[in-house]
Length: 239
Image 1 (tube, one colour):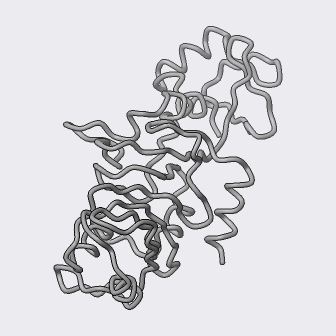
Image 2 (cartoon, helix red, strand yellow):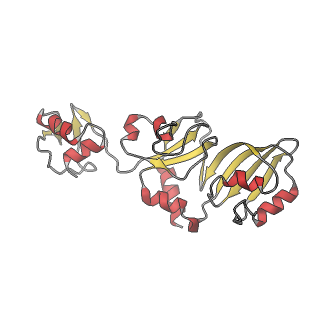
Image 3 (cartoon, one colour):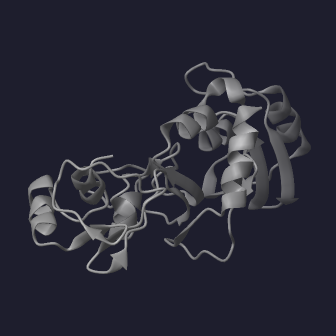
């Protein structure tokens, strides 16, 4: 990789600004000053420094966020705040994007990455990656609903969902439930309950594939996935 591209990708400035940094002698590779913007470096094998500080390079970034309500699962929007706006600048420079979407008013687990291959496989309908949600429903959820969801319900547009696993945690005037589905249709959880005459008043995604939400993350907080979690995802989506 060219040294100017490496520095620009990591947010050290535009290509033009990076060339100025190189000419100033601020950048070294293996403790040797580099001024040629076209010089190629291997950041995985060579030590690159800027003003004496080692530049950490990684090709991919993998983040877990506890998405807050009111924020869009998008990379940019001219009106509303997006999940990318919640990231630190040193994470934004890797240009991560949400793996799938959560509705604006839905909370919970959201993965962000710039690894398009992994994201594609996690979202592929052929993979049937399960996602578990906690929801509060505005009325009593019954055994009949469990049976209906287990068979698949017909949405307002005529689409019949794949079977979902519905668990009643608390039933009453307002019910707490968990629902695991293997699809990601638009507003699917809400529309599934509307199909049986009920409404979702609160929704939170708890798991995606093999990963549970890190409950230590407050709403709006995020962290990098551990190496073990990344490997778990890769092994899971490769099956």
